[in-house]
Structures are given as structure tokens and as C-alpha cells.
Image 1: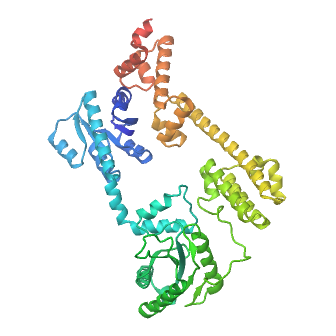
Image 2: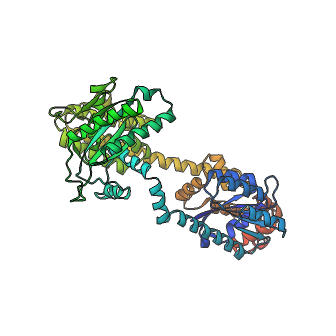
Image 3: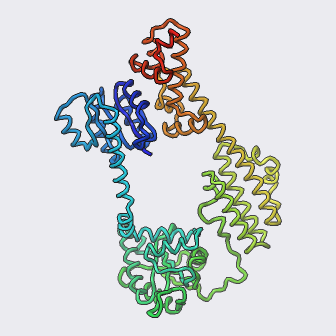
Length: 542
């Protein structure tokens, strides 16, 4: 459903059009109202508008000038012009500003609805073309290098895929020859000395040149998938090309001695042709995609420990043993991180993530008190960050569990840590749900207080400005809490106040109309009759 904005310096006309036409029949969900070009721009800055109906002649910013500004900022908004002047020059300028339609006042309801329906059709056709499969595929092919790098980065950071074939579908789509179970190794490369002296632009060109040399050296038997990581290293994931007898790389083992030879060639040719020094770490063979993150982390660790600040080194992990070594946890650090999920309030995803973390603890580090503590500190710091960011106190939420936090962790088993985590998370979730309900109730109360004191001037825009919320968001929250839209609420209050004044005062009907915000008495009489079935005078006489 689409968002419509009606702009005219005659408030009665805007109200009439907004409330008395069946906009939903032509695909309109919400109708917004503005009484000047400046008001319209303010609304569009806060709310995603799809279609604008505007008068040409308005004080300040005219309708044509408004459309010109809209074209400069919101290129996909459709504009319909209303005017009381059948003037060729206006029509010509409207065409120049690419107005969808140009209607003469007074426009018939059917004419307006048809113009909006036409605009909706144009929008649907436009976005259908933008999202078409052919255009998407063309765009994807143009951006393949970037898409491949994003996917590799996500694997290096430990991203897992829910469906078993989801990763394979991405690999096939990005034309990458990798598959689950295929052997790979990682080469980590650092550019040094001469490269450090170059400008950022020149260094980018040199990085491109280094990658091209690597591709050329490995091209006969290996496929390279590479990116520049957050630490400034060039990361190459190396897999063997399928032999002529098979198209499956899963069975193609790496010849690490041959790979090491090619790495040495790369180091030599970079020095020879680019006049720069590089250091490299080559991992041992691993299994794609399950061991990508661990292999990458091991390369980073080895770079720091084995090469450090030295220059021009090459180190292979092929013959190193992992036996007896500690290792870091993975599931608790895999994206999305726990504090991000807490910040977004994604409670189901939080439960899934913690279950994965506890399962890893049980299967790999069940007897490691250090890893239990590492998990505890991660959970406690994430909770502390989220609770304080929501302006709450941990002691108020945790109750007795807070004393355990102050006294330091006393968890000897994973079961104890899991129980503590579930208790604290349950209390925090309950507190946040209550806070959200109170927050929405507070918004409703502020709206009703403002309307009670400013019924004559109240509109969605003025109310939103008073409670400092986006009009679209405010409208949804109010309807969610009360079951009644703000426009319906305002109309009902105005009519109820009018009925009360008709019964209890001697004020003239035009005075009552003005008192509740209707500048034209004729329009007030029409709206009143629509609600009560009789005119205000008939209501008073009865």
C-alpha cells in the first residue's frame, strides 16, 4: 500500500479530500495533509511519501516550485497538479517537471481517484522493472567482485548458514567453484616497506597488481578467492581446480609442497617487478566451509607470533601440530554478536545463539573451566551494555543474581552457567516488555492531552511535532494501542464537541465550526451530517 500527501492552502479542501474519498480502493494506505509547500517538504523529510497531490497557487512555495524540489530529492515520487487556471504555460511547466497528471479544479472524485490509480500503476511498473530478475542478474554480474568479497568476509568471521544448501546456492550464483567438504588453504599476505610509503590511491593499485601476479602464478592448477581484511592483510583462500576427469573439487587434495613453491615465486616476482617486500603465512590444509574461520584465526595468530615486525618472511603451518593447544570459542563470537541481538530485542535469535554457544562448550570444552569463564564474561558484559543503554540498573533486574555477579563467578559446570543466564535473560526480557508497553501507553496519553488542549489546531503533523515522533510511526503506535486511527480520533472528538455545543450553548453554527477547527461552515455541516445523519441545525432543533 502507498502513502499519499495532499497539499493545498485551503485546509477544508484538504480535509475533505483526505477523509471523504475511498483511497484504499486505489492502493493508498495513509493520507497525509499539508497546508503549504514548506509543510509538505517537512512531512516528506520525515515520512516516505509515494504520491503528492498539490495545488499550483499557494503562498510562499508554489506547487510547481514544490514539484521541482521533490524532483531534486525524491526522484520516484509521483506528482499530480491541481489548478483553477486552464493555462497552457502552467501545463507546459507541469510537463517539464514530469508531473503525472494535471487536473482542473473543481476535480470530480472519480477524476482524482483515477489520477492516483494511474500514479500507483506507474510506481508498480517502475519498481517491478527495478526488481526484475533480468535486471537483478545483470546488476549482480557487474558487482560480482564485491559480492564475492562480502561472502568471503562473512565466512572468515564465522558466519553460518541455516539451510544446508544456502551457502552452495550463493557460491553457484557468484560463480565460485567451492563446495562443502572441499580442501583449501589460506595464504595471508602483508605488503611492506616500499608499499608503506605510497599514497592510498597508489597502494590500492599496487594491491591490485599483487593480486594479479598471484592469480597468474596459481592459475594453472588453483583458484584464488581473495580480499583485504580489517587488519590490512590480503587474504587468499586457495582451492585446487577440478581435474579434467571430474567437475567436483571435493576430492581434489592440495599439494602443499607445490603451493609453498608458488608462494615463494609470488614473493620473488613482487620484489622483482613491484620493488616491494611482502611477508606471508600459509595455512595447512583444511575443510571448506567449516574450518574457514579457525584457519584464518590461526594464520593471524601465527603472523603475530612468528613474523611480527620482521620483513620479507614466509612461514608455513603445514607441519605444525595443534595437539594440546588451547583455542578460542567460536559460536559466542560469530555474528550477529550477543550485544547486537540484545540491542535489537531479538529474543528468539538470542536463545538460538546461546544454545549454540552452550552446545559448543559441552562438546569441545566441557572440562575447561577457563572456557566456561570466557563464556560467562562475554554474556555478563553484553547484558551490562544492553541494560545500561536502556537506562536500567542491573541490580533492579537481576535481584539475587546480582549478588552473584558482584561476588564473582562461581560456575563449575556449564549447567550452572546456563541456568544463571536463563534466569537473568528472562527477567530482562520481562522488564523490557513492560517498559515498551508503558512507553506506548505514555505516547497515547501525551497525544490525548495535546488534543484535549488544542483540538482546534490538532492534526497528525502538529501532534507528531509535539511528541517528537515520526508521523507514520506515531499513527501506527496509536492505532495499535487504541484500535482507532488518529484522524478518526480527531474527527470523533470534534463531532462530539460540536454536538455538545449545539445542545448546551447558543453559539451560532459557524462559531461552533470555527471553534473546532473548520474554516468553512459548509464543510463542517457536511462532515457533521455524514456522522450523525442530520445537519447541525436539525440536531439542535431536536
